[in-house]
Image (cartoon, rainbow, N blue to C red; front, side, top):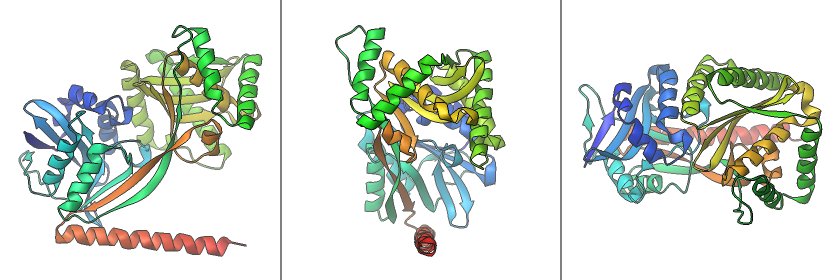
Length: 389
């Protein structure tokens, strides 16, 4: 049993098959997503790769993919693929059935009670571990946090922004994959939507059919390039309609997703879809699909067609497609936009963990984060009071 501290992308390359196995179908945890992120974001602000890999002989059984950066708070560890990319459900990867073992071993390693194997010249020091928007049901991560607390590391857990998920029931009366199967599952889904919103969804579904809107999906590299250009254009136009600058105006964000979508397409995990009114694209969705769950990551709309609700129509088409292909859920990810609850999605809670090293520097960094959070909370309260009529 060994723990290795991985500090170079070259070391990551050999882990791809086992890493993806540990990801258990969660696309944001996959090697392809996280290593693509590191290639584009790893050079920023003096970031250093800091990934703990736990091996049982040659077998990878646990992984904490992080990077380290020197900040005003000290040496801070954060998850790979975090930040502006807004990846979800990152957490601690562990072989099923060994979550508790992995949590204990990596906690002992972070605490300095167990020395990892490190490459020449690499240091293991850290002062603060910041894990945003984590899944509270992640057993391995829960064990890691509890064990670090037991070993004397100061920590705070706060409620994070929820994700929203639609869950679908089984259908046993019709052949899987048939039109009847899709219709039956779609009707059962609508029964879980509030009556007023159910009427609006049916109306949008009928309107899209009456207008002859067509659904298109990227299936090869040529259609991916075409679909991706539609995504960027409609996303940026929609944001500009609200007086905002869309995310794809950021060079690293754009180049990361160009690489990530190509890798996802090759692995059969990409749903890049767009809706057309004749030859004109009017809505688009960028989704990641794996293990029976479709994750709706990014979207775009033609501002000139808002009255036709093209985004709602496209999402309903994707729901139907997912139902026919036997998906069990659609995850609308982070954010409390009203349309998510209108579709019948339920909030999935998340937590943010702030853990300090038990050293003097770690405790000081942790204390400073608490002062900063209290100051921001007080400033927010004052601002609300000032704005109140």
